[in-house]
Structures are given as C-alpha cells and as structure tokens.
Image (cartoon, rainbow, N blue to C red; front, side):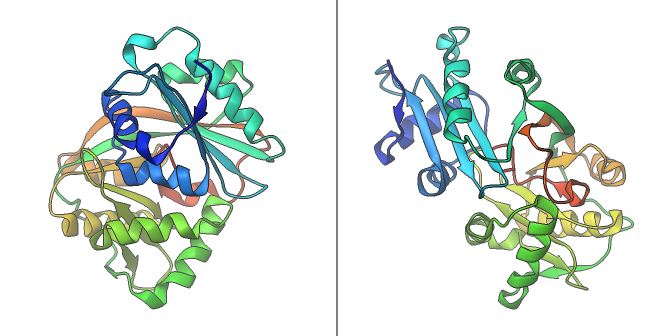
Length: 273
C-alpha cells in the first residue's frame, strides 16, 4: 500500500477521515491542499474512509506547513503516520522553516523527527459573543485588503493571500477590521462549526472587539484557536460561556518561525497555520 497523491475523487473519503478524527475540515479545506500544496494518502480500499493522509502547504522558501496527518482508528499504531511524515519532510526539503501544529498525542512523534516547540494554543468552542473592554470594529471592505494582507504577512511571516481571500469568500460575515484599520479577523465555514481565524491584533481590546464582532455576525457557536498568551481574551470568552476543547503546540524544523507570532491572536487553524 504505497502512498499516492490524493485526487478530487478521494475527497468524500478524505472528509470522512478528518470527521472520524473529530476534526472540522470540509471538502473545500481539502481542496486548498490540492490547489496550493500536495497530499499523499494510503488507501487500503475501504469504501467509506481513507486509511491515512498527510499534506504539505508551501508558503514560499521561508515557510511551509505540514498538515492533515491522520490515520483511521483501526489502522493506528502501524507506522503509517511516521511514514507519511517522512514523505512530508522530504517533500519540503530546502524550506528554511517547516512548521506544524501538534496535538499532545502527536507531539512526541514530531519531536523524535527533530521538531521543536515554539508556542501553544488551544481550541475553544465559543458561546455568546464576549463583551467588556472591546474596541469597536467594522465589516471588512474591498479597499481594506491591501492593508490586511500586509499585516498578516508581517505577523505570520510570509504572504498567504489566496488562503485568506478564500476564507473571506466562504464566510464573509466573519470578516472584520478595527476602526483604525490596524487589526482584523477572518473566518470560514466548517464541517462541524464555523471557525474564526486568523485574528491579528496589537491589543487585548482590539482582539476582544474583533472576536465579538465575528461571533455576533455568525449568529451561533463557533471555534477559535486562541494563543496561550492571550489571557484577557481567554477570560472574556470564558465569561461568555466558551469551552476549551483541546490543546496544540506549534512546532518547527529548521529555523525559528518568521514574522511576529505574538501578533497572532488566533490561528487560521492547525491545518493552515
């Protein structure tokens, strides 16, 4: 069962695999990797669900992401994830910084491959929109895009225009910017719930205001992958009924993360950085 490239025809079984793992990816999320990166799958012929996958998403020579390292429960502990991780690292050979977001279970596997911890974040299920201490925000307009892309590239470390514009097209009501145009939030639809992120902000008040605006516009529960150093926003969303679901560690192989990670209030997601 050698790995092979994922195809459009595989997407229903790929979505089933991520759903089996409790994740939130839609077919459109998987298509990001088909269009902008690479995906390998181990296919044992199961009619409903692939056996295992891994994806790489290059953002240029300075940074690339490894994502979607998933194994169907009945095929776990057979070395499939490690084999696919070795493919992913080899596929990104020459990239200065290779990054991924590890669950607690995967972290030790990645450490054995040479990855180092950089910072932590947690996935939250938002209840009501947070309130108190929030800076005002307004809906994103077309003329805001150049500034948003510049600020995201400064925080994330490299440009990712296609990814962010795709998010905004999928969930436009979650796209907000502070009144001074300095900070922003985007979001996208999900298999289980909509997700807010990335959120780039310089102050707790701006972060609270952006998340409150996006959550209010969505009109129901949403997911947020919140950096561990965002204590004020964590308190605000918890007071509004948010629940912390799981933890992640951002890890890298090669050089440290580019950009200014401290400005990343909430991640685009563990699959996208």
